Image (tube, rainbow, N blue to C red):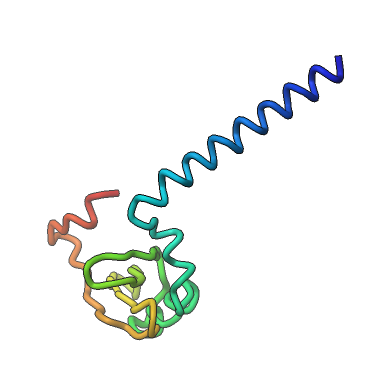
Length: 114
């Protein structure tokens, strides 16, 4: 009975490994995932959050790494009292690219996607 169980587990593991290899091969043809692209960033998420907090004078509530037509960067939402700032930090240099106060009633599509 133990042999059958071991063979079953080995077969299952082989199937999972094979499926993972297929998924990797298929994914390599696609655009790079942001989660993988962040490994190439010279600025870490922690560094970007620190810079954004200092820039806006508050505490980070949310942060994420993004790659778009403007290149790799971090989007950090910083709360300072009753104000919320959207701070964009360059992933290569670690410098603040922009800091814009987020208006609550602006109808911003970015705020509605969550």
